[in-house]
Length: 432
Image 1: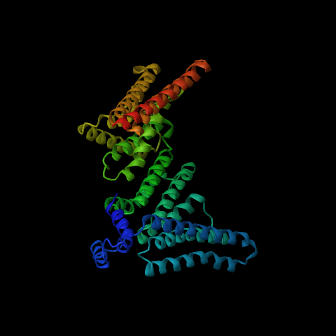
Image 2 (image 1 turned 120 degrees about the vertical axis):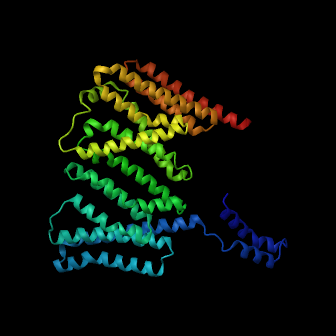
Image 3 (image 1 turned 45 degrees about the horizontal axis):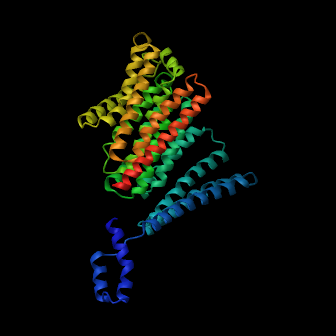
């Protein structure tokens, strides 16, 4: 329990101690003077922030729906004035909260979120009123860039979440229209100083954790679309490299587990899922049909960024092995291993040998994680090792010609193994 929780408990007990005669009022006042003001209830503060953010979202959406319902019945002048009304109202609320309620996190989050929505609504309404030509990706990009300063001006986390989701949406749409979506990485980096400041100072840990989840998922989702020119050939090295960076970097953030957990979870299970996919015959046939050295015309920026990403993976692997963190290093080895397999080609490494290498990798990884879980008695790690091995067995079932009765019996045995191992660890904990 933290010191703040102890102080809050003491302040709740002081009136009862005074009434019971255990201490007098003067002693209680001296204790309050020593520990300072009563700490604010974090759950109450979080509830206010969530209510303010949801209120801003609902008000903004409600105004948009009301305007849309009566839009065709209004004159152009009325539509123009109403188009700017949400923006003016948002500016007024944001200015008032900045001047009068700057210390209130709920007001900052709510005002910044409403103003961000108002900016998008005003742009869309003005464009529709005057029939300004444009497309959805350009609208999203302009909207997000105009709303980005709100993150730093109000130090608000929800606009950062909306910004990352917006630029990810822009990247997905832009990939289908041949836009320069490699700039997604620059756009995604713009709110990083705000997020990193929260992480480094240990402030607003829940907000920093939510931002970490959004960042990890946004980068993973947009990764393939940003490299769409070479994705058909490089999809496996691209994602394995990204997941390796996720996992290896998370090991360097041991002081901030809530922030490193999203990257560790996405990196580890993303690696396992892709390696399971790479144990299928049809997947490897398609990969070996495409030459890894085939250069797409005009795609040199993609190859340059991929090379940088691989260099980062190699550097993190060296650092991990120097620290003798062999299990973490094994997760990161998946990307270089697959790249070497593809570079060797079917002449040096036939299809069957590539499948054997993938199966052995997952077998070794699952065994090490399971062994570590048994040694430490940590059920999540134990179940992770069992999950990797069970996934490998399940893929082999569906990739083979075993009868359904045999598959069913083997799945029952795997389930029994899960239950038995968990029961064994629980009994060990009880005895300890």
